[in-house]
Length: 214
Image (cartoon, rainbow, N blue to C red):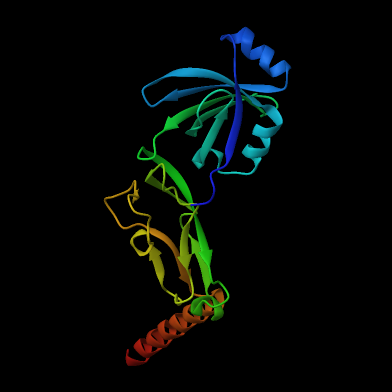
């Protein structure tokens, strides 16, 4: 797991729409931190810093270290971002506190490596990605950045199931009733066309032989 990024915030005095509007006028995004059997607190986050983190991607599936002046740091995960309906810019965030052993559901991206050494791809096969991300139940102290699929030994016709991926300890897929496919390497279009032509020729020959017998 990579180093945990920070969310820097300040306590927000006052609640309600008036305090939230004032925060936005000052270039801040109001938010609430809740969970872990503790009282919720109202916070403000700098708009520019939050927007940068949102644009970096995976904001809703990243574990953050929340730093608030005068309080101990706490692990949080975002459970909601409200946006302006016209400008699509953040107007409010909801953060949930987590213990190290807390378990949460997250969508984790799938990363494919060794494209250049894949037997199937070198033959002209095509990598077909069925799932670019997988929903997992993970512990807060062991969230993987991605699920890694090694393509090196995969040939045309091979596929990768979730059972083929090494998951971190304490992690399991949310879909448990089947061994679902992540990706496969399909035959190149030229080979498919050739196979199709062969089948058509074989069919034509069979029909011709049948006509001769009659």
